[in-house]
Image 1 (cartoon, helix red, strand yellow):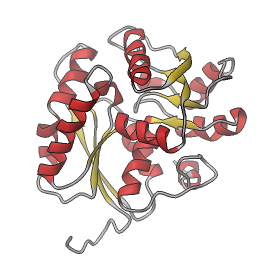
Image 2 (cartoon, rainbow, N blue to C red):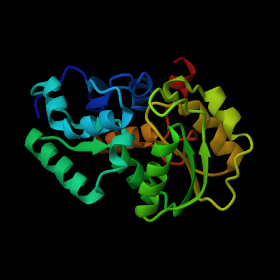
Image 3 (tube, one colour):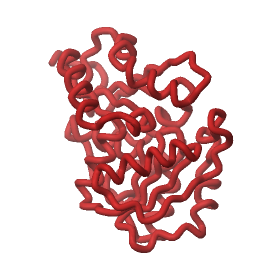
Length: 250
């Protein structure tokens, strides 16, 4: 690998849905000092959410063309919703083949989340969903098919099936919705979706519930940082820490 002026703690790319204002912001907070993150957008002209999610997955290789021939350490696909309705094993083979051609690992948020769940030995989750109901059901089914017990599901207010409100869910609104959520019997809490603000929720909820709390963005940042050997433990999260000071000034 050639010498770099910047990115000694990692040189990463991320693909995020076109209207997502959260994933890139949280990944920049989560990745360690000295890491570089370059972002490109997943784009679809469809007005239907289900079709947009399909387009994002099917056009993954073309979306990476926006980065030209940049030699990344790894690139993250920051859209868990695109993975729920796809066959996991065939999707992983395709993603692996694309990454092999490009010369860097390509890590989906769903695969990163599954790896984090495995690393923590979590067998059951309480699921917090910011999605419309049909996508919440697809999310729940996805994790059950991956061998997890979903002990409870919290459906946050998400608007209509197409004009869903994930991007407007602040940490305060999420914590308010979680106030009476029953998590007994779960070995962890999963905050679904890269478009929902999650970091302040993780900080408060891990202490309050004495359970590991994972989000799509936390898991994706952890998976990226592992590639460059920069993933660290810390008080913020049982999975991946060292980011509270950066969150405090965000």
